[in-house]
Length: 69
Image (cartoon, rainbow, N blue to C red; front, side, top):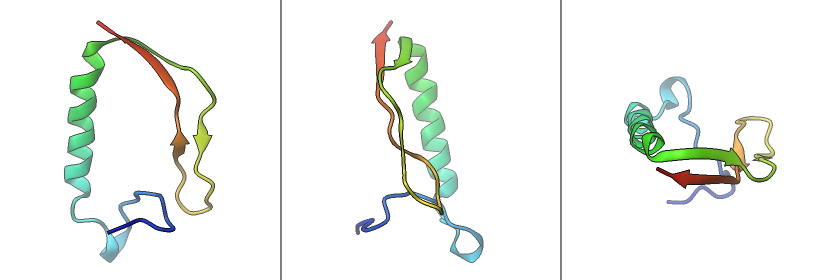
């Protein structure tokens, strides 16, 4: 299964809403809850690049620099 040509990961809407959206949101929440306490600092180290679309907005690249505790 691929995402060509669409690179976005939207959950859809209405009858097309993703059945796994709640699980995906819980996974992301758990990931950051475990990651952030381990970071001493986090900062941007370049310009963010946005996804070029009129439908679903988001980031294509978000360059960061971090140090661990």
